[in-house]
Length: 67
Image (cartoon, rainbow, N blue to C red; front, top):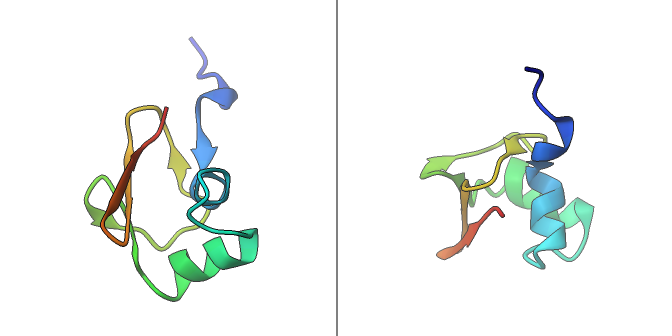
């Protein structure tokens, strides 16, 4: 069965929608230059990283679960 393309959100979009980043540009900076974003415990530098329900995003000690 084919995967539903709506089952994920990109990391930069998630940071913006969750209020961690005020803008898409700020989200990009956080991910690509400041290296302060972790997905499931591993540093992530790809702003287009696909997140799926249950993934854990950590920024500045704040943990958010993708729903």
